Structures are given as structure tokens and as C-alpha cells.
Image 1 (cartoon, helix red, strand yellow):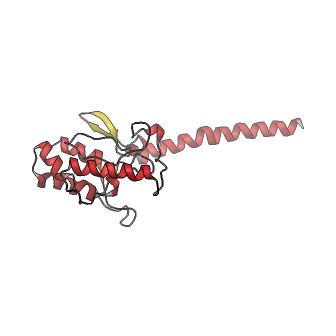
Image 2: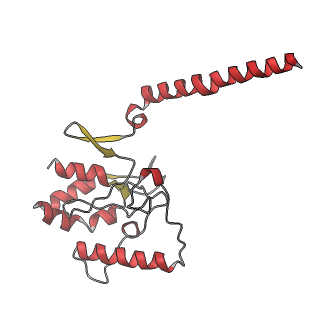
Image 3: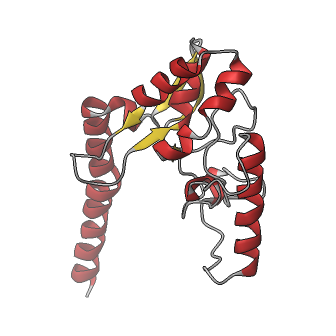
Length: 190
């Protein structure tokens, strides 16, 4: 019996070293070597200082910037430690009321008529509440507001939106998207 316990203990130590120390070190080392930007959080910098991650949405409310998706993550939204959606279903009155309120706010902020359709990504939160991207259509309806607030030519702002629109991954996965943080940092550089 003591021999069996000794072997079990040695196996525990060996597996702990392999899976708890060696494997994480190898994976971390390879990630740092092959994908250093992503392994370090895909951080975006402005004037040499980190201003956010390209992979986590932020709350932009200033009219001089493009606004991202609403967030249901945490009390005030965009809380990476509370990632998650609202869990409200399509028949939820609260969800419908919130969507109508968000649509009205988007229309007001962007000077749109009451019957102008608003892309769903500007009125509903993503499943994680942290989506950093919006659709090109969602960026398009904000171009005039941002150009006016930044005192820029609309064509120049539209060119930035076009420049920062990413296509489908590998040509067929997902949908075209615009990273709001990257786009807003590019606006600041103009």
C-alpha cells in the first residue's frame, strides 16, 4: 500500500511540474515569440501611453468620437471583470424599451430623422458586453456628427472609416467591422 501511495505522489508531482509549470511556460514563451502584440493584451498606445485594448470596447460619449456598442457588462458598462450580456430575451419589455431609448439617442446625437433605421449594434449590447467593433453602417451614420464636432471634412472622416474597416477574417468568417478604438485614435492623429 505504501508503495502505491509513493507512486501516486510521484505522479502528482510530475504532472504538476508538466501541466502547472512547464506547459504554461512553453505556451507563454511561444505566444510572446509568435504573437507578442496579442499576447500582451493588444494594447493601443497614444503618445507612448497605453489607452486601452483593441479587443475590449470602451465607452466613447464625446461627440468628437465614434461611439461603440452599448455594454451590459458591469454597473456602468465595459467592465472587463463583469463580462456578460443582459440575458434579456427578444420578448423582454425592458430590452425593447432600452433598444428604443438607445435608437432615439443615436438619432438625436447624429441628427437623423425619426424614421431613419439605426443599425442594431448601436442599440443592443453584445453577448460579452465588451465588443470593440461596430459595423461599417454604424460608423457611416456617425461620420457627419464626428466631422462637424472635429471641424473636419466629411470626406476625410469617411476615408478614415474606409481605411479602418476590416473585412471578413480569411475572406469568409464573420462580417466587415470597424474597431472603434483604432478609428478614434486615428482621428486624434489628424
